Image (cartoon, rainbow, N blue to C red; front, side):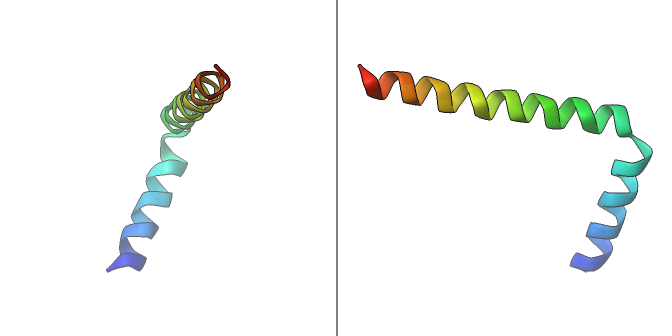
Length: 44
């Protein structure tokens, strides 16, 4: 079941490269912003 799910997920990633890039970029920016905010709030 998991093998089938991963195969379908990677197939969809390959088909929708622009959409995947936007999602990954947004996730990376969000995580970076949370880390920066937590770092800055810990310093004060």
